[in-house]
Length: 136
Image (cartoon, rainbow, N blue to C red; front, side, top):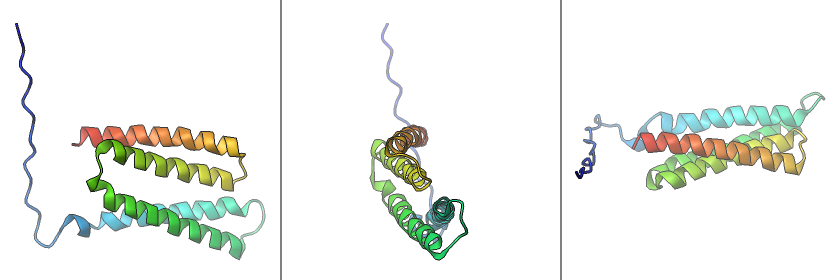
């Protein structure tokens, strides 16, 4: 007895409220900005070490925040055009590189930074891919 395949489920597109598009969604800019602020503060804190905070630590945190925020913003902007596997890989790479860099700023060895970055990147990839796969 043969079984038939279930038909593909098609999502109905909901009409968007007037004046609001995907590019104008407030979280499109707020999430990368919040992540950048937290990342920059933590990077400056790790760079400080045991001594008092000086302008070099503040500048390091600011540059880290700007770079990480720009990468998050670009990824959030381009994620709609990427397939779910590539999107998960991009988020995994961003998370792994970010955590590996922070661990190196705290004085970790190169091998430890690489291993931690790979582990975190793999975990972020799995989580992001699961979210993208279940929501499509």
